[in-house]
Amino acid sequence: MTYTLPPLPYAQDALAPHISAETLDFHYGKHHAGYVAKLNSIVSEDLKQHSVEEIVAKGPSNVPAGIYNSAAQTFNHTFYWNSLAPVASRQAAPSDALNALIVKSFGSFDAFKTKFSDVAAGHFGSGWAWLVQEKATGLLKIVDTHDAVSVIHDTTVKPILVCDVWEHAYYIDYRNARPKYIESWWGLVNWKFAEANATL
Image (cartoon, rainbow, N blue to C red):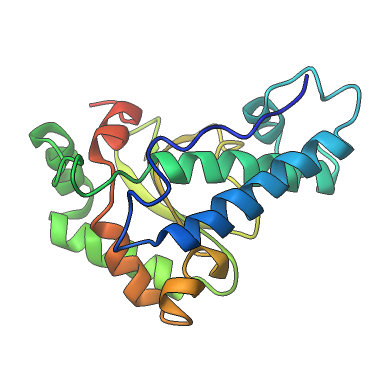
């Protein structure tokens, strides 16, 4: 199997002014593309018959580090692009059903937004802030993962949304002001994608 860079679900300038076309040129066109190319160059014969998601789902302790990191970065970035939608076409707020689950899980939408922003802003170093759903309870929770690590090897949860907090996601537009990037991220959240991932 040859792994390919999935196309962006929108034009490269479609997230402006929150995230610039220049950022997407580097983030998608250089970083994401680089992870896909690296995966193709190092994947082992026994793993190349598996999809990227299948490789990542095996977990970092069961896959050589270089292969896991490249596959996880490929998956995480694809999930991130789909977690975003252009302002002009996005659903501005979660549906009643998804909002009800958010309120049930966190007390209120504002409490959820504050907690998610705090986790994303407070994450030390490179990584990801995830909204996930617990399979056992159906409730939503917020987790962060470091570096390339994904959440999909955790069979107790499923990912709903993700915010990339690696510096390359925001440094061109916001320099070191990660909280400003996170606030702009809220203006791009793809609530339809989140609802499609959730069990309501």
